[in-house]
Amino acid sequence: MKKRIWSLLLIMVMVISLLAGCKGKIETEDKPIADKTDNKSSDSDTAKKDDDKGSQTDEKVNITFYSTQVGMDDKFEDIIDKFEEANPNITVEYIVAGDNQLQKWMSLYASNDGPTVSLMDPINIWENQDRMLVLEHSENEWMNQVYDSAYASYIFDGDIYAIPISTQGYGILYNQRVLDAAVGGTFDPDTIRSRDDLRELFDKIEASGVPATMITGVNWSIGMHYLALTYAGYRENREIEKTVVEQSRAGTFDLANDEVFNSFMDTFDMLAEYNYNKADPLVGNIDMDAEALATGKVGTWFMGDWSWVQLKDIPNRDTEFGIIPIPINNDVNDERNSRIPASQPKGYCIDVSQNSVEKQEAGKKFIEFICFDNYAQQIISDVMGATLPYENVTATSDSPLAAATAWYTEQDRTIDISNFILMPSDFWYENGASMEAYLSGAIDRDTLAAQVSDYWKNQ
Figure 1 (tube, one colour):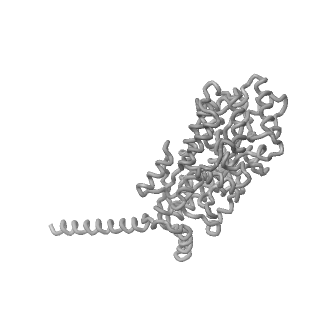
Figure 2 (cartoon, helix red, strand yellow):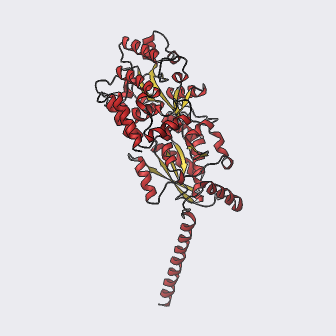
Figure 3 (cartoon, rainbow, N blue to C red):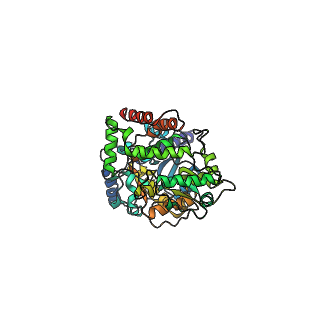
């Protein structure tokens, strides 16, 4: 009987000890930092802590990674496996975004589960910069491997809040074989320096028996990638673009009579005139449209280099594709007509509002790995077909569209559209509907301008 009592007492002591140990671990690892007042100090405190206490690599750290990059879930999990092999004391939980990407992200914050690392659009990071860590070159030498120009979309008031995953360019994609046949030789995109040049090319394509061009009538394409160019990249400088947005919000900007807006809409009208989808302009099926370009059913397509994801696995496709800049007028000396819009559409950011300093440090290690590890670079290059905005990249891509973007970048022939961050997060959705109505002929240009102006006044 006595032995039984002693056994029970020993078990109780062991249970109490275990509970105390678990409590200590939770308080050490998972205690969130206070609401951010100065996230620069958070990063500085981390550096000081490392100096005082030495490396934290012996501590087990669990972090989370949330991504809005479509089509990469399985591949990100592969990269995480490699990272955890190299960093056995860090565990990364991958959170799948699903269809309602922004809503899910905000719901995680509402439940106090803000991800340690998130891959988001610049506008999302800008709108939530108070939650995010300011990233300092002086404390993270690996940041020097990112091209300075690639940070543009993630610098707010002089501070860097994210690391870009890629540089992506867009414009008028073309099928080389179809255009070679149309021009009776090797088509050179440098021959297109004006809207009339593009019309002449379209006429030649049509004369060869192939529809000239194609618009995919979806809100994000024509509402953001096209319409938003009237606010970002094509004016004299970024300050003027900011002024246009401010005046639009105040209701004092005359969009209907704006030269840049009308220049883009004149070109859009021409694209619509030759549109392969003219009979059903709002069908909006990107896979069908990709197949049409890939197999030569159409000569050109307003889209971006990201569409290699759809193009590359199409059976019996052609192999050579490129990008033509969007000509917005007939001035052959206007450099805007020979440049493609390019940006860094998504970036990795680190939360400081609901993640401990230890988790922030682990998050930085994860970002360094996913950006600069050779295995990670090759996966991202293969799957996304993207241009990586880093020095000394060894990964190779089979995407001719990424090669085209890289060529324009190397030639300093890209247009900086980082002021897309000035667009409210619902810009593409609300104004995309108006652009769809315009494309289908339901409204005229004056009505379009009025609807877009009303949108701004309600912001």
